[in-house]
Length: 82
Image (cartoon, rainbow, N blue to C red; front, side):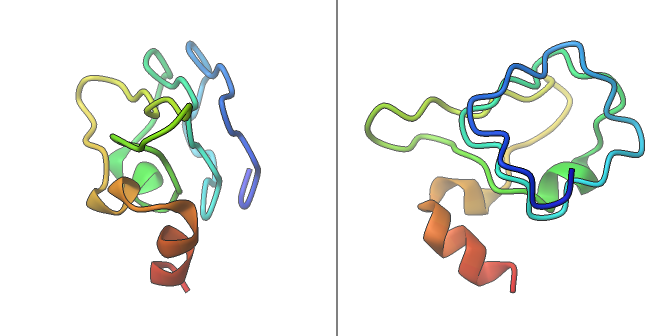
């Protein structure tokens, strides 16, 4: 799923063990009940956190933290991961 556009995808309950998520767009996605998702996987993605407009926050399992970069617009997140 590297570089996949998963914007607003419902991935609740998805098995994410060993999923390659490098540069995947998770903006507005629901991974709240995803299984096997790690912080290292999340840190390689783009996501949303407290963004203005109609973009919902990316939902993560309670034991994972949203990366600080997610508070930036997508174009700025992409510049940081080059």
